[in-house]
Image 1 (spheres, rainbow, N blue to C red):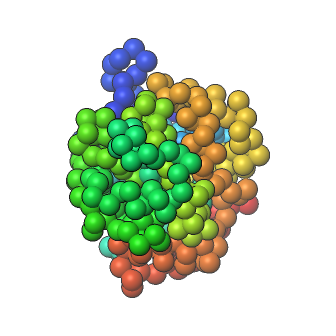
Image 2: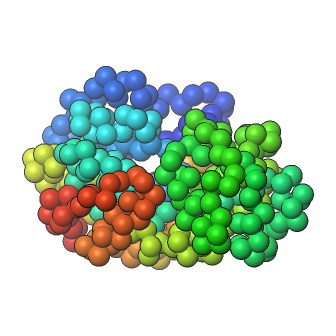
Length: 352
């Protein structure tokens, strides 16, 4: 069984060329691959394409399901398509991909717009955020990783932060406002995407940024900055304050027409999540992440994996979704009127 490896959008393959297996956004937007069906091949497997908006440890369950044979055990042949965030939903709608390994935040935005999406499993809880300050700024303000967070927040007054979206700025504010500070007391440079955070930090264009791991840890490892806040020491970023993190999404119509395929795929993902939960911190798990992340230090991958809350299984609860909606509304990524209903927008029916 084959799975096409995803690559971080800003990196090249080991030989420095763009991987031939990368499914481009343009092709997907045009509907290429939309003819994919649920017909079984001669070996009894069903081919499906899974879309992701980026490749990092948040999609570790997909890699684990491939490497540990969980997809094969459930007779699913998986191809991974790296999509730009702007076409993720359209790729699912067109049938170019049958599943999305996406975020609850983006899913709730899609629900708000009335798309035909259904969440069938969760693969992580919460979002592993990190705030990193440039080495130069940290040195000038005598900030280290051990500096009390209240002091860090006060020292950021007058600084320039970096953000690629309003919701990212709002996530930083959840930390800052606890100490009487907010981004209204500093400049925030708008960056085109998280992939340029590190270069902006190194060049001095920004003094700090806040985004999900492993980008902050990578900046620290490269000597560009110091991670001073994360989901472990900022209560507002704790997983139990955020609800579901990464989730498995399909179309309601696809699930209705191909319930066995959806069940097989979600079962394989749940097996992978259970494996990660039971083996977190192991060299074997880091090996899997490292094989898909050339150029990223193993220590960074291991730490990033540890900062994600991996559930024991992929089942969801109404309470989790209530929490998730509340958090997403708080960062301005969804309207206060947004609601999700079991059986309509999310379900555990395809999980054992």
